[in-house]
Structures are given as structure tokens and as C-alpha cells.
Length: 336
Image (cartoon, rainbow, N blue to C red; front, side, top):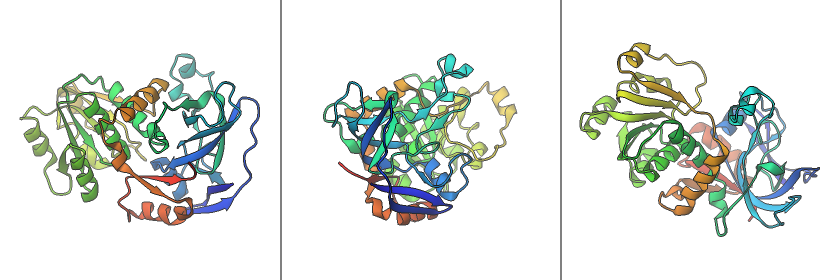
């Protein structure tokens, strides 16, 4: 089968590999689409702490069941809940398997979906609704991150929110806020193309490279500042303004993964009685909500998706690393 395989730092190869053989409790999926995530780019750079070459990456993917499921017939459209939890640690036993002490991921700790076929544990299969596009099926996982972030934020309908970063996760968070009825969603970004996409999706935007972020948020919230602020950029510069643009007793949500600790002004948190919340990936119920959001069509997430052939993988990964592309969410089409 055709596979996109991480070989070494900044090296992805398109190779023929053996079709996976499934064992008890495993399902073979014929992959249709597989998305490139930020964590895949960390693997590609050769700096991921767990991913080891040779590895077939990909934890955002969709396809159809080929064989092995106990109740779902071959041809059933599915996506996959890619988290690998131990089931024994205290978080798992307390109902928080998504923050398992030894949390793993399909596509990082075992071969993933950037291949024509992939095998996964049966309990990770998520059937798609009838008629649900397989292309959108590969985007359920990122939207689930947005759902989880909004859920953890203690959002209330009508709240105003700021989202730092107009990458895939930032726009997923912004889209989920819009779907749930936020009064205003302000997206802060420096990249002109991404700012334009955010505007096209109906969000208020602030150009971080040219505008005063504090003044812009005050203007767009009639001097009140925001109820919520989501850090999806994971850039140290966010900490320069995020506590200032929150109202008293507002909430800041850390969504993006920082590579090293950032300095946080605890005095501002104390004096404004702010709340800081961390989020990590998602829960099962977030996949269900994400599917409903995508199925509704109320948020134009499809405009974020760019599709490439698997043969283009070496060039596309190099372009993503260099920032030489307008793709916000790149999907490789492996079947369908």
C-alpha cells in the first residue's frame, strides 16, 4: 500500500509498505483523507519527544471500514478517536482518560492514517452519519479541540471572546464560539491571508502586526473588554496582552501547546480576579458535538481545507515548514 512515512528530520517519503494485518479487537480502515496537524510538523522537524522514525503519521483521518469490526459492516464511513489511554491511572479511573498519565496517540505512538490502510483498536471507531462527507470526517478531530476549549471555558451564550491565532485550531475555536452564540468573536492574527480567511468567516479581526491589540479589543467591546480569551497561538507575545484584554473576572484559556514556559503576570490575575484554564485535546462527547456542528453547515469550515495528492507530501511538508503556502488545513487524499 502507499504510505507517507516520516524517515528523518525534515524527510517524508512516499513508499510502498505492507498492508496492516489486524488481530483480535482491531479494525482495518481504508483511508480516504488524512490531515496534517501541528504535532505532525513537530514530528517532521525531528523534535517530537516520542515519535520515532520510521513512522506513518496522521491522527486526523477518515475512511471506510475494510474488515474486522464486530457490528459495523465493511464500507461503513468512519473517523477515529485517536487517543491511547492506559485505563489504569488515576485520571483514567476518574473519567479523565484524555489526560491519562501516559497518554499516547495513533500516528505518534503507533502508525497512523497517512496511508491507504490503517489498523486501529475497535473501540476507537467513530461511525459517521449517513451522507456525511469523508473530507469533513477528517476534520472532526480539530473541531473537537475547539468544542472542548469552549466547554472548558465556562462559556455562556452571549459572551464576547478573543481568539489569538487564525490557524486551524484558532479558527475551529472561533467557529465553535460562533455556533454556540457568542455575541462577538475577535480573531487576532499577523498573517494577512489568515486574517482574510477569518474575515470571510464573519469574525472581527485585529492585525497583530499593525494594530494596537488592547485598543482594538476595547473598541470592539465598547470599552468593556472580553469575557473570554483563547490562546491558540502558543506564542510568548500573547502573554503581553491577553490579561489586559480580559474584563474583571474574565477567563483566559490556554489551547495551544507552548514549547517552553512563558512568563505570566500573576499580579494582574490577582487584581482582576481572572481565571486561567488549560485544555488538552478532547473527550468522546466533544467528537459527537463536533460532528453535529460540521453537519449543520452553519460554520463554513470547509473553506479551511486544502487537498493534495499523497505524492506531493515531501514538497507540501517542506512548504508548510517554510510558511510558503496559503493552506490552513492540508489534507492528503488517499482514497474515496
